[in-house]
Image (cartoon, rainbow, N blue to C red):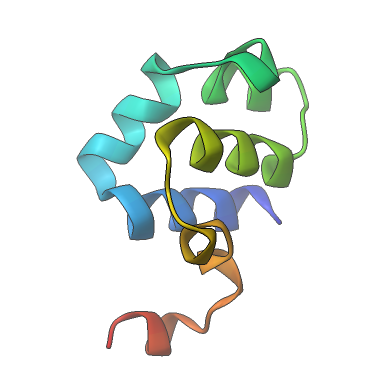
Length: 75
């Protein structure tokens, strides 16, 4: 997962406003900080995304949303 895919996935699953808030405010135990802090420390976006999905109780489908063709995602 690229960093740009991380942000696209955040927007697709949580929406831009809530998603950005979760990234900067929600503490992720698996990352020992927020998603933003983890990314800033150099953790792989895929690991941060997995931790965010787990902590917020999202479905397995949401975990892989970045692998779905964006055109199909809008349907």
